[in-house]
Amino acid sequence: MRVCLLYDCLYPYTVGGAEHWYRDLAERLAADGHEVTYVTLRQWPGRPPEIPGVHVIAVAPRMELYVEGRRRIGPPLRFALGAWRHLRSHGDRYDAVHTGAGPFFPLLAAALARRGHGYRLVVDWFEVWTRRYWEEYLGAAKGTIAWLVQRLCARVPHEAFCFSRLHARRLVAEGFRGRLVVLEGLYRGDGELPVSRPAEPLVVFAGRHIPEKRVPELVEAFARARESLPDLRLEIYGDGPQRPEVLRLIEQRGLDGAAIAPGFVEAERVSEAFARALCVVLPSTREGYGLVVVEAAARGTPAVVVRSPDNAATELVDDGENGVVAESPEAGALAEAILRVHEAGEPLRASTAAWYGRNAERLALDSSLAEVLRAYGAD
Image (cartoon, rainbow, N blue to C red; front, side, top):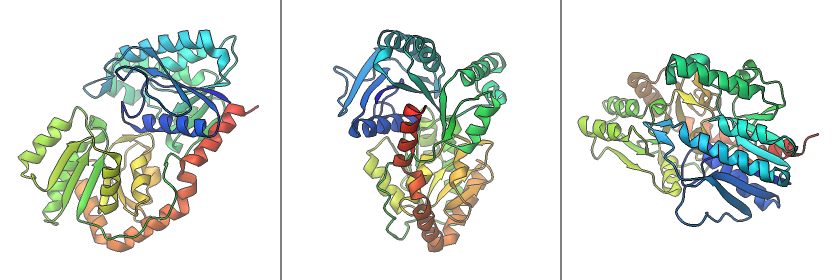
């Protein structure tokens, strides 16, 4: 199978759930003997990175992707133009072109370039935003335009993957009428059952420091939880536009020594922190999946997530079994959820490990890879 993966970011030059997904997908497809081309923006100095079995092509120059935590419009437009040119010239090299719905322009470019080539167009919809959310995010005028573009993309003939039932329902409501599969497996671990180990009084967060993730609220929640648990510690991994505010709050609340925020670190360090933690907290109000919940459960560690209409991570937490669902992202509710995990103690860690054991197969990357290959070769 000849596959073109079309995405403007490449792990580890940028870090996020989609970046991990496309990098993992490229490596697995190549390892299975498929011919894989990864078309992206330039994000590296010098020569393209070497990924075994994967041909990496940059079709647009290196550009800053974000401003104040939000995607800039210029880079995806430049990338879409480069992708269109590449596919118009080389589309007959591919049996399938696999791209992401956001930020929309590359999807439209791939659809326009498909004429005369006949490749299958496969699209990942990590999130589908409501009109109200678009307007809150961009303002009334720009938000309405973005929502209309989203609806247009939903109606482009393609095969779709969603990563949650929430966003699958929204995609259908936006007018999608093609083949739609919900992929639940994004975890690239080995599927082995977690080895039980006592928890340290430690709360961990890992992710981008952007407004939707609500990391400053976690610092305040931690400070409140420490009033009941004085030995509690906090480790915050990742970076983003709100990191200065996170560091300021740690200092303001007198948490130096109890809370650290070292930025991006090696994946092994984060994984080891997950294994030691009392809980992993994802205070985000908007998630397309919530991979850290699975990564934590694979180590027998419960997760705290937030109940929100845009948060698909709640689909991965059975309250009281592998974590706790906080009723809001406010500091008081998050602190209460952390204390609930502490009070539940070792029985909650045991039930989290058991939950992972029952669900490991469906949550594994290999289960999604099988569905992807079926989409590439479906009649």
